[in-house]
Amino acid sequence: MNGTIGTTAVTWTAFGTSAAAASETIAGIMEIATQAEVNGGTDDLRAVTALKLAQWSGRKFKTVGIVGDGSATSFNIDHNFGTRDVQVVCYRNGGDYEDATADYKRPTVNRVVVQFAAAPAANGWVVVIIG
Image (cartoon, rainbow, N blue to C red):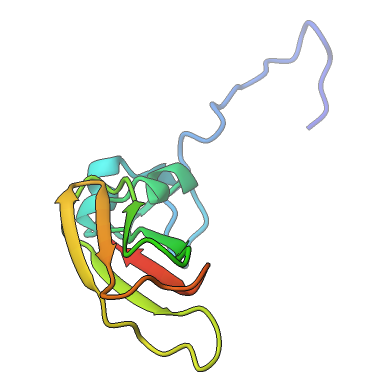
């Protein structure tokens, strides 16, 4: 539209006020999910940020430790997950990587103690904790 500065009326329209909500098939305005919506996992209309995903209450944690020094039979593995609800797997760190026969204790919400009947060789076993 052509006009003359100072004489032609200009009609202004607010930008973006009529954009539709975005979805998987429609471009539009996207809302960011709250942490509660991410944890609940029931809202399919909001986007998840990397930070919200990292703080998701249902995510799994994993830590790995290599144990064995040729003399000790008990090893503390600190996982710092804040729960005793963890799974522990221990396997040989070489050869055929067979599973270990060891006892596991959860004395705190942040530590697992792995106990062997005989002292494992230096760096002989891998301990994986998932919580």
